[in-house]
Image 1 (spheres, rainbow over the protein chains, first blue to last red):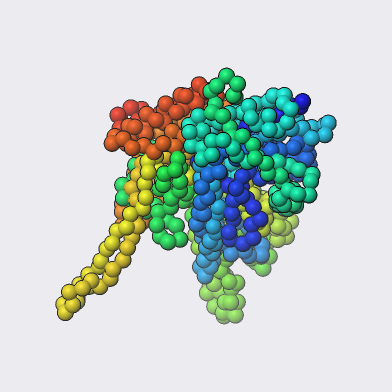
Image 2: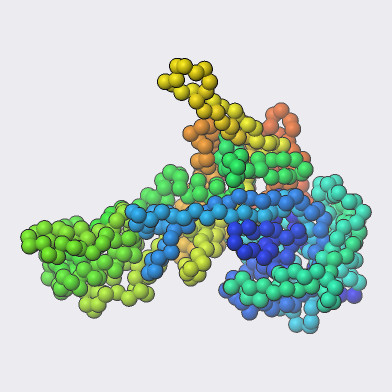
Length: 246
Length: 377
């Protein structure tokens, strides 16, 4: 038996960055490891430049993610205006960038990008302490999710959660049991496509899992390395509201 | 002070195309297995930042000076031996401070003014035999190409730097120049953040989170087939031009979350300015529409309902209220009812509470002013 922290990730839009080269920034089909620990870091008040704390945080817990509602992918067409880079010129405000610091012969560039989102998806994340010296107890993580230090978002800043994370800490025999007792908001449960089974994505040490590139090697430089992720069929979430379902 | 201020805003846009995709159609998304129209977060933010509402609310005491002439003034202050403030009023004023040589003063003036804008090219009038003409050409060469906007703080810093240069007789280093605008209290960047790949130290974490706005009901883009007639064409009955313009209409739900602590931090803990920024944000979010296709549709609209919440508990949007698309005829009132009941049941289930305030223009309850005060205090 071990302690598990379980919480839900629901929002009208979510976005979990994959390998992004150039202008297409797709979303993964479920929350990446870096997204979940980034969210926890933000809730705890860890800043982007605190490399050490972020690394320790991500290295100290095993993660499983249950897909409750896979959502519909969306590719958003996005334009951004940026000023030309010039040596010895620093743009300090948006109006500097769009005109103030530009010469009469200079125009801001327009950059096009396509950004992937998931519409109307819902996931349940589950954490277990790895090793014996976690930086925060699971209860402390739960409290941080209830009263976060920074504004939480689901992968991209424009993706606010549409339900409270509703973190629960409990003792269970394994990830499957911890996930099984964590219910799904009733209105979302009504929309399950497969009411019997769904998929869980788990950290694994075995070579057989899928290769995913979402293990953060350096936060500031956005460097990621590959890890293995196992997928397992598990029972779908029960509707929340019963006696035994959180 | 509660950390988060959340806004839930309902606005009804008539036929409009506020935010287009690459094919020119209004942006869309799926929610609750139903197609919705969408206005992206970045489109809304740009409209607010460039709006008159922002200018009016954040201009005021913060109003600076718009000028091309900073370089000329610094030059005059240095060669005439007067403080920058005196040269600001009168370029020919003479004083008793240490006067620098013209060549050095030109270098310093160009360095200082260059922080605020691209300067005109250096004077080529040196060879002009007429000293008066030569002087005019020199002064003009110290001007910034376009009008630069200097805040009162920036002017103070520029005056301080001018005196430092007078004392040292040296052209200011990069660090000193950076300091010139280090304290720029650009409220829009404090709110909406900035990410620069080139110079990460100027990055600012946005204190305001803006979600994509989406319709509370099922909505798809419609085609408007149009023709334009050639006024001078008398021989041919046909149209001079044919085209299709896509548009949509709907009641949009918009969610905004402000991290007040981060906003204050981004504004160097200037509480008064942080409150002003919040006021400007609430006003803009309730009254400013994106500018897309406004000439064709005039689809500007004010929010008919807005709810503000303050608290420390985890912020969350209330889009769940519209997971089942609103289908009732009285769409506005129905959307309000669903939003409020979802909020209540969510608070009951998850045990969160927050202070709140709202206005409802459909029933004439509450005011925008009261909402603004509630959010900012």
